[in-house]
Length: 456
Length: 171
Image (cartoon, rainbow over all chains, first blue to last red):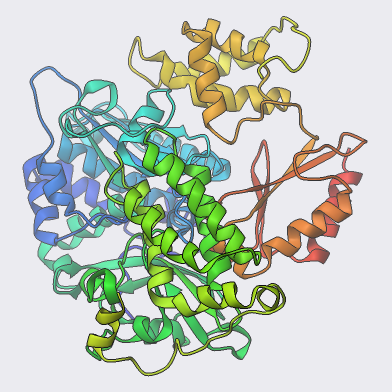
């Protein structure tokens, strides 16, 4: 069995309650940090651990924390990003539902490290059941003296609140989340100033993902060096992977970073292979925003190395032949799935969720959706395919926040790897309405690197 | 757009206002506008939708301009700006759910209820709509029903029939 750092006790009956969680070693990291460490020492441990943001960007957490401005007489805030909305990602829901105290424990230690006296957990509005679970857990922790005034006699005070969102994907972007927490529309802010200098109510603010905050607990318990020994290279520790799509056993898995992708898909310990005995056609490895890869390129890199579940290995080959670990939303497509239809579906998502602030994203996502719709429904032209590439390039890099990039990459990568399927939709419009293109050559041995680069 | 019904003054119940008061304490003094989203959720849970009158009242309560409430209520997709059925079935229509049959489930709901997306059944019991990713892709296809936002997972046509039947017979 692989090492588990977050979900080790997930199957203990009653682990959602304070008493059972505490009996199983819960809140040790709060005792250790508040009684034996300075806030700076906690930040140093997190730096040593090599922990990288688990929400998708993979930015080193310790470094993010060390950027936090500490002006005299100004409040500082820690906000947990629990606005989980990236298609394919449901790990935070799982963690908050089953082991809420892990998040609360991490919030206390992280707030202590940052010197925050009030912290918020911004939970997406649809997760009302999880909001109630967290509120109950917060009350239990407060009752036991782990929240409120003078925690464990350390002189440190902390209040923790849950704030519900309103069902907007964009609020997962940290400055949009801050706007939303202030009671406004979720329009991302222009950076700089970064939240570390001016965040919620113009005060220095750190925003971290649920899983990132939870990972602080094993880091403090085992030490930063202990955590860094798990994983591979600069991808330290474990990662929660949300597996969905046409798999035998979809669900949330905690993996040690560096696990081969092939093992993750096919071994019985994890996803148990493709459902209904079908073949794997493609994978979106890190949530809908990252480039889609055909089966051959997800299992092996273009150089013939086995692809691993790590930040570096999944990005191996850049955007030509690689992808990203992202938020760990692992979506598997079987041989019967239509890439054009799925790309249209994702485009509709980004069009729907664009906040409307930047023209390239607001207009471009709409055009991509329309063009993809006509390709899928048999009214496409051959020139539409290049038109889509053109639109995606005009969105990418030209917007305030990364939603524009996130909308452009799935379209660009689908055309890069599955152009023949798009062309077939144009040349066989009637047939494309009745059947799918199938697996074609996407699971065949890899072409030579030069050929792939040459085509693009 | 905001005036779909005749304008009628409404009064929030004292229990509701008590809940608002508690929420406001979570934010620093003078930052009561932050309570807007949680307050709107409570209003929708109480009335089934967020009416223009209710928005004006919320603005009064939080001491902000009505436009500050309108712009937020129209931005966030969870808030209904028109009356809905008693039960609103919100089916996830994004990629991972569609890989395992969400489109069939939506077609089945449309057929079973006999109303199009966004419309209300004649008895006022149901309306339905497709929504974007609900972060439950491993249990797909899924739907949710407010105001509790209970989840129904791994949907089949049979389980949807059963769910609708159960809700119909509930008092």
